[in-house]
Amino acid sequence: MANVTTPIKAEARDLNFFYSNGARALKGISMPLYENKITALIGPSGCGKSTFLRCFNRMHDLYPGNKYQGQIVMHPDNTNVLDAGVDPIEVRMRISMVFQKPNPFPKSIYENVAYGLRVRGENNKRIMDDKVEEALKGAALWNEVKDRLHDLAFNLSGGQQQRLCIARALATDPEIMLFDEPTSALDPIATANIEELMVELRSKLTILVVTHNMQQAARVSDYTAYMYLGELIEYNDTDKIFTTPSRKETEDYITGKFG
Amino acid sequence: MEHRASVIENLGEVRAMIKRHKRNDLLFAGLGLLCLMLGLVTLMLLFWQLIADGYPKFTLDFLTEFPSRHASRAGLLSAWTGSLLVMTVTFVTAVPIGVAAGLYLEEYAPKNWFTDLIEINVSNLAGVPSIIYGLLALGLFVYMLGFGQSILTAGLTLALLILPIVIVSTREAIRAIPVSIREAAYGVGATKWQVVYDHVFKYSYGGILTGVIIGMSRALGETAPIITIGALTFIAFLPPAPITAEPPFLNFEWLSSGFTVMPIQMFNWLSRPDHAFHINAAATGALIIVVTLLMNGAAIWMRYKIRKNIKW
Ligand SMILES: Nc1ncnc2c1ncn2[C@@H]1O[C@H](COP(=O)(O)OP(=O)(O)O)[C@@H](O)[C@H]1O
Ligand SMILES: [Mg+2]
Image: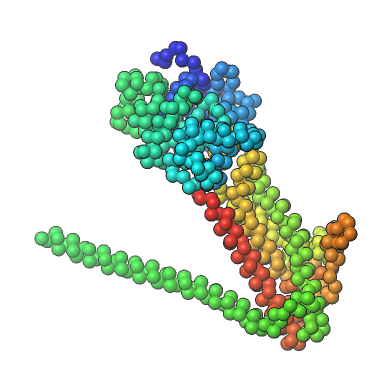
């Protein structure tokens, strides 16, 4: 299976999740995220990919009545991010997220990227300027916006907005970045840009990406997990999943027999 | 061949049907326009009537003179200053309380039967006849708290009256903010207060402001509750000035002063048998309408300015 020398950045251990209506959306998921690798989550719509992803940064805490069971342990510090004693804000400072639809704030390009720093109390303009520039470069957006940093973010194209959201998530040097179908609202060229960017970002951080697009998973990821009805059916190297899946369900899904 | 003929026949039917539906569209649009016009024209006529009747009184003197037994000399001075001061009290109390209550209900309050109950009640309060507020204020502010028949009492009464409007519009403005924006802010590690202050409040204050102004313009024209708490109808003095020449420069005695407001002055003049006073009343009515329209215009303009930068 996985290369034994690659360190694990985080791992889910027997993770269950219940929405406030009692629905059990995740059923005993155990799975590693390898450091500086891209892990893709695939599976038919409604199988729990977003639910799983959003456990990592405790997004479910925003809505009352949701319940986690099990652990997501981060390394090297062995912190269980789901532990009630761990502040979700601390978790979100370490694990940032890019959403399905670009969701910039109705603020300037600069302020969008700087917001994560402001939240941390940073207000030294020089440091801020540097970090914003670095993040925009990291998100391959700097050249397009460097002359209009104080324009509204809404004036950017959809693909640029999504890269801005990546810059925003990047500005605070997270250890893990979560992507929830980051290209589903974008055209093919913008999609290609984002995919390329994810591959570049891999050297800086660990990535978990949900995608409903199997080609995308095959193109960008190192590891792939196939989920179905809240369960993890198969997890393996992306190559193996797409060439020699060990489970019949996985094969049916990736060959398009269902899904 | 037969098949082609039937296609053409079908097409004819489809076209006839579309034509029929279009006619219905037109009919409804016309009906709607008529209803709109009925309302608008009636209002315009009333407004025009007020202007035509009050025209002789559109003078500066009318604003700088106290009321008088002589219709020709009577002015609005005590009434408009009274309105201004009462509205100041209303603004200063209703806005912070209403906005804070709306923010709390939307952002902080747990969702349970108790907050549901509060929610239903707040909405219902907006429909309570204003004279009921007057009665409540008479008991609470005038007698129990001993504020007397003062500007303070009137301002607080109107504040209560418009509180539901401010609360409801605050909540609606907040609800218009998409979940995705909140999640984006929480996602980078913002605390609840940071989300509320940096985002929720900033993106909703255009809507909040609109609600505040609509509430204030409602308060400006309210008469019944002010009469109930015992506003005077004939006032030939001004309340003590809020700003003084000597330290501490601010003076709060005006809060406990007796007062009148524009709609009451208007009501008073209207109830005189002498027709000359009716001119004054019409001029006052026109002024109230103009101020109200200006306030609403300002609300629309500000909302436009603020919303321009926000697209969702
Ligand atoms: N807020 C919610 N409350 C209750 N059930 C939910 C909620 N969000 C999603 N679900 C359910 O959880 C399951 C997984 O949803 P989701 O994680 O969004 O799937 P995916 O991202 O794989 O399409 C679905 O059956 C969905 O109906
Ligand atoms: Mg999803």
